Length: 242
Image (cartoon, rainbow, N blue to C red):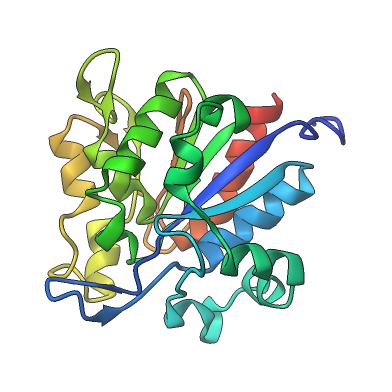
């Protein structure tokens, strides 16, 4: 078990979507799935890490209404919305390019954590700024973690040392075809994460629908769904404090 102060010098950048809509007509309301930001936020804080919230456009981050309803409104999300410090960071998030294009980007952070939500289907999957940030961070040997729909950003990335898809040959996961079908969004996402990763030569691993599933392959950590936010974040803590 890591010492209590093992994470004192660690810093994580949680990257969130800025998209309030997605789909072929960009008219389906969405945003970040709040659990996928709130759970890692508190897991990292409890580990003694410094946490910064960024988003593609900066400023307030849209929330998928589904993530704050019924059983999906988990305790970490409720806590987050009543936490002045967390909410202030969430409403005034840093624009990704302002930090990722700075000369000290790689030195400043220890983990680049991509939260999910269907909003990522609008502004994560074909985003040059995010692509460059992931590739640069990964190439430096720093931890890259993506959960649920967050891994959609990885499909555009290359391993700069080989020129091959970043996920090629790596054990990874992401929101599954079965889960996408269960929420009725198969025809509204730009592509299937599961199919795309397999096409790119990844060793895609599938867990049971709506059950925690995390894959760790070197400095790449991926989670399958919202229920994986806890195990994803804990895998990051283990990676950074081992």
